[in-house]
Image 1: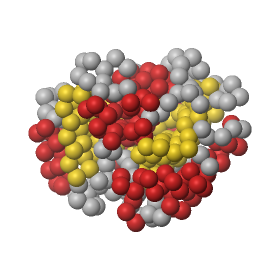
Image 2: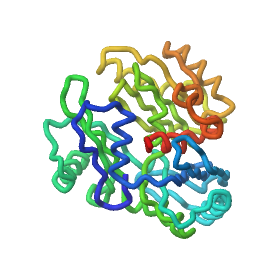
Image 3: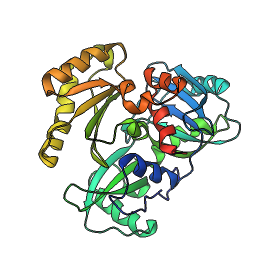
Image 4: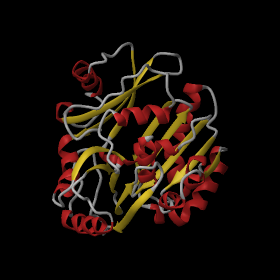
Length: 329
């Protein structure tokens, strides 16, 4: 989503492009900086991509003290701004800003994503935005008139129009932007980190992303050219203290909804953010949900990247690589 009140819009005919292409075109409706920064509950990171697609020029990551970032759609997100600013300053020593605009990826809990059916929706942003805000009014715990909204169109399973809409409270977005601005940066684009990672998923068949960041678990299901499910929930603990059942209970509703709606099984799951416990949760998901599961780093799209870019994904920085793949240059 753009960091202004005017949304970026996807304007091609629904159903004419695959999901990666659609997200790519959605992002092309806004600036696409080569510098991408992620502020997550546990770390801040940055990567600068070269003119040749997939070429990583520089990358850096810094761990954050516990409690520095506490994602929420309504409450203060950065209770320790000095800690975040200090870590990001060290990151920028390895990945200089150079006065350029950047893409800012923020936690999923700060951004709500909805997949909405519509009979029709105006193509012009100024006409579509009031309708979207009206539809979202009862679904978000804040005043929709004080939000940033971005969206793209897709064709639903039965051929009707669907709109994938991302919405965040302006005050929350500004918390993250102000950290960057205090270090002479400018966020030309702001979006949730898991949306940035979606292009890492294969476009054939149905694949599920199970992505953990702090205590937030995001489950996204993609079927070919459609984003079918996008669900973010808060878990009772971070990865070190989680039980397998904590994750299974949150992933199961997404799987069940997809199967009931699309009348087919999920072909496989790709895991991200589970660190040293990835194998434990992968085995649990395979056993309980009867689906194949593997690491996001094992996705075919990741295998095609240069080694430096693959290393980002292996180290839990998949959204930075996903942003590069969104660019499509």
